[in-house]
Length: 212
Image (cartoon, rainbow, N blue to C red; front, side):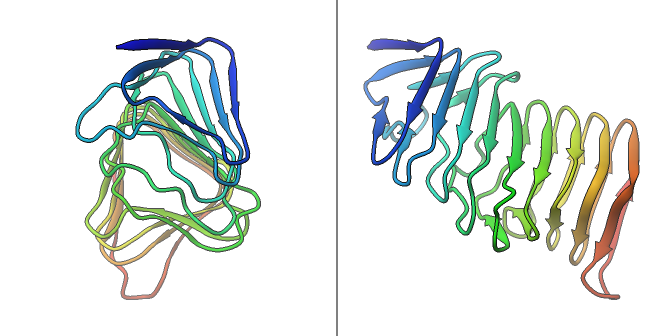
């Protein structure tokens, strides 16, 4: 197969499409997807390693909607979603990421990442959700964070029968975590909550579980 390596920064704007099918593209630098209809992707079906995000690499999703790349992500690679206003990006159900950051200060509605996001091999950061909420997966979804969970602002909604399972430390510095029915947070190491952070529940009948 043909190979390509991105050592610096690859900007994808406008209607540009980078399709790695029939080749192997290794990202060692950064990919910045900022076009209204731009995509960095592979159209292969099934299991494939057409796109590899290496240690220390970044994928910046600076657009509304779109698709997060189907790829092999190193534990120390980072996906940052930063351009969402009204429409969540889609992604492969069960895709494993390294670091994952949600940073959308211009978010103007509640956003649902509908497909399950099961395992993050390193850190999960909620940096900003505007004045609305972000939630991940449908009911009965568990997100396993192998590193740390950090919330610095915004609202993270843990919906019905969902679990956030943090195997590292959990830093609830600022913002809101809102629980719906039978949802919970499990933290296996240290837990801290800043003075500006709130835990809320949607009604008095909601059962919330914290486990340390």
